[in-house]
Image (cartoon, rainbow, N blue to C red):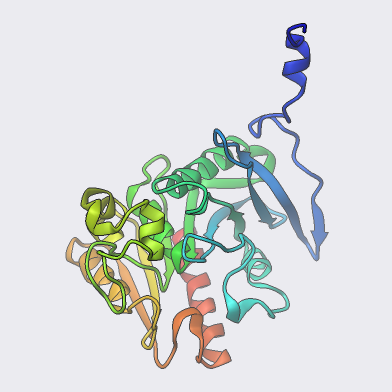
Length: 290
């Protein structure tokens, strides 16, 4: 059997995301939407993609990180309370003059931490590389995440330096994987946190600490907008309360918004309260990159 022709081997893979042509954009009332744009192909993994919501004029960026216990979820989902909005949350952000990149990341069934954080860094690198074509300024980026995505958003804001982020919007995200909180035990090996790390947090304390935004707080961090339901039964509100306290203690601007009576995902909250919180989050993002 002959060895494969090197020219053939070079033609088989799809073009690298750094060089691949951008897909055609759909036009939505003055906005451009590009869906399923590959930004990275980790070794042995599926291609990672993002969706881009782009205003007509060059814009600063919201990097959106979805939730789902690090185990599931979709990049185009901001949680149960926004799914029936028309226009949807990302179109609303773009209408406010903010470009939005909704990104895939490797889930815990595919790779363990820090893989998902590495993927967010890769997305920022790709967006910076292609910024001229896209009409975006990644030097003015706010990261926004909900639940597990809020945890990753907080970590990215606290650890990414090139370029540094302008702010972080964190909705009901875990901030501490090292200590018991609510129903979470660091000794358990079957929790979403353990599946993220690849072992019970108590069995890998250094990794659990590295994956805890509360342990990564520093004086040079960007401003934070933290929001949590007071009745959250899945992620204790103490995660956001303690993170806000730690940030303020080192001089970082940290807004804390507690939604009274709301469970995880804003379950049980009034529609008007969810809409108001989204508007406040949008205002925070817009002012951070103005």
